Image 1: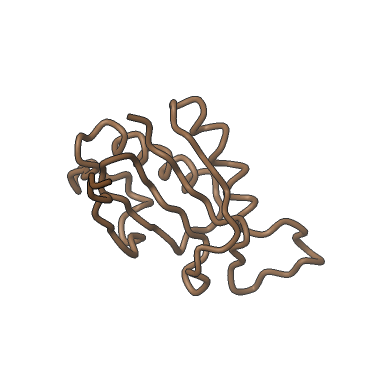
Image 2: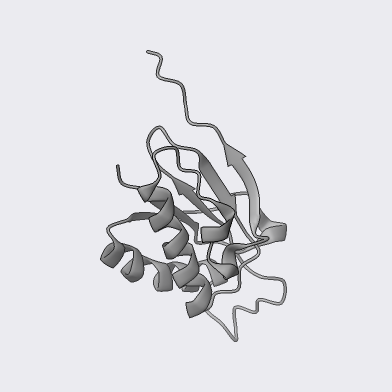
Length: 123
């Protein structure tokens, strides 16, 4: 099943200045993630505010019937965008969504802020 990368497009890092940088840090990170994710067979979506402002930039990795993860405190860099996509690809390949620590790309280590259990299968 396809995993999703949800990207907060309103995230602004501490010294963000709209005069110097018209796009938010979240928009810049999303612009870097989206083409990589498409190539990797992942889905993306942008949301306005994930309420993790002190840890901007924030993303969530989610998939049906899988553990979901929220990560933050990213700088909008090519290296971080690729690491997020690489981790989401591993998440997609996992039955439960859990990825062994030794497989995590280095730039995502120390960035996890929460893990959520999948929603139960009840109608």
